[in-house]
Amino acid sequence: MGTANSEAKDEAIANFDGEECKKDSTQFSEGEKVLAYHGLLIYEAKIQRAEFRKKECKYFVHYLGWSKNWDEWVGADRLMKVTEANLEKQRKLFKYQNGDKRLKGHIPQGKLKVPIGRGKKRKSEFGVEQDKEGEEAEHLLKLQMPGILKKQLVDDWELISQLGKLIKLPRSPNVEEILKKYLEFKLKRGDMVGDSLVEVLNGLRSYFDKALPALLLYKAEREQYAEVISENNTSPSSIYGAEHLLRLFVKLPDLLAYTNMEEEALNVLQQKLADFLRFLQKNQSSFFVSSYDGPQVEIHSKAQKK
Image (cartoon, rainbow, N blue to C red; front, side, top):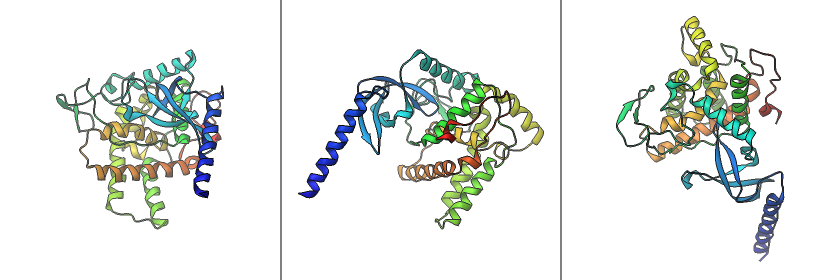
């Protein structure tokens, strides 16, 4: 009986706080149309439910025009009011993600999924088969980007695409070194490190080297890439660092949608990638740059302030 009373009390508190979330004008309300971050882009969404979870308001959102499979709980940091300023930011993000003609067919055109499906297949720049545009492939890999790293991505985009700054290259630690540090971290902690983890890390490096020139550079970075690659005559993973590696994780669900992985193997991969993201988050201050080359602006990351 005591347990039942306790559960009822907890439910009552949750319902009360949920009502407070709905009443707070600085937050969001059920039924409200909002703009929501998903990856690096912003999408139109509608709040289905509002609840108080783990000392903060959480919102169950439906992305307008998309399957309910994409519905998810998000925090207020993922949401924005529908204002002209925020709509302009949405348009700019889509523009910079889709501006380079070589990226068409690889980057979602303002959608949550890459436009591929059961049509005629063609080879992509990554050596995998890709269906013709206009149809969709299911994203079986679902990576939850930590909020701090999401802010890191947005700050990175703003500094480079909006303020004309660049990341000084070569980076230290570079991608190869970060992957090695992760392996050393797992060994030092006493975790079981099998061939599968080594294969995942080697796969990340390979994907990074092939994806960087086609998918992971903003337009403002392409001239720098051409110069640094010709000067060093080496792979991108030995020149670029955590900033560009993090961008790869945004693209991985799209890239892996083309592979035929069994569900069990996909679940294992998803767990390993999530653990690696936690490792990046834990080492954010030492892996990510604190300043960018270019015009003098305030560069203290919002992600680092939190």
